[in-house]
Image (tube, rainbow, N blue to C red; front, side):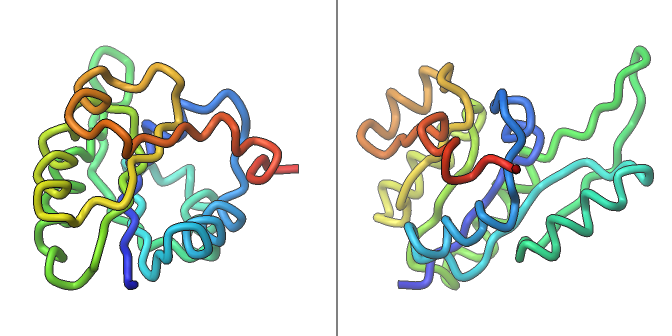
Length: 153
């Protein structure tokens, strides 16, 4: 199997109440889900250069979104980029692992599942979207129980 992972970086960061070790996480994806390529979608803010380097050292291919500041908050939603990349690479992987709790990805998850191309949806949050849970029942795994394995020490 040659599977790809598509990580919604902001959702992963906001969904966990613990700090993840990205190298361990990438190794987990390789071993558990036969991932050979892992995309990490994230907004680009220059002061987080060290984070980006850590993600790349862990094995992730970074896909950046230009960040804009709105009402004093940074906004860099990468949802469209993730969906587009999953479709561009559709013939290059056997199955996809989506890392998100965001219901905006329910249509992608359902489409991939219908093509027998969805391996799993890893939800960083126990409050995974109802849309994901409804559209791909049995494919959702919650990351909360991975804390002992993946927490940054």
